Length: 274
Image (cartoon, rainbow, N blue to C red):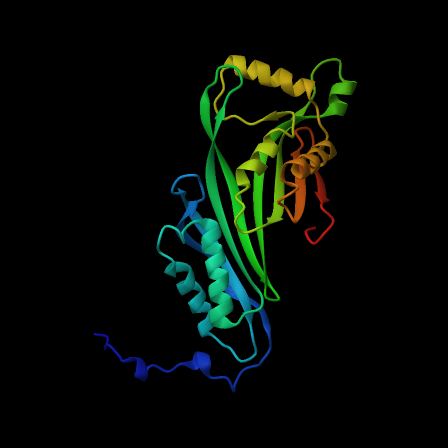
């Protein structure tokens, strides 16, 4: 039967500093810590499952024990206010900075939210699963915050329509938007709405025949190239959130239906995000 030992009996090789190479480690931490979190909303917050990545730099005089403290810090914030994603990320950064003296750190929370979609003719309701992430970075002691979303839409090829007597090929398409903003800004739903309106048609999970007929013809009347969409998103993002964002990056991908390749296009605010 195992013997219960005292703390004093346990050796701590993690803190023996004279037998290892003393190099600065730019990033050490944990990935895929799964915990319950809250998506900010007008009420008490919407429960979700967050997948957390946390890391920071490790100076030459540190070893081993730091990585376990990351996990403890993530698990340690228990009350509902601290479980709201932006507050949680900010608190983890503060903890890393104050407890470890880190000058550089990153906390990423990936989460899923459900958005209600209403079909255009029959008004049938359905839920669309949408993926987002909220990131906090400590860069040389300064904090930066980012929201990233990936949304889906359909697109009809303008060239296919132009050269065909009837019909035009279409594709499932996606756009990923990353925006740098202030920590308190909650913008994921705004970004998803911009993506919904950027292509030939938005995505619905339940539609009637009347909806399908309408959507198909709407797509045909609104063909877009991949560069059309990325430009529209840049213009709409600036007009909608120009007073909020500090930087942005947009990547659009059209998953071609008559090729094995993917048409892609990227545009940025021309600052740090590439």
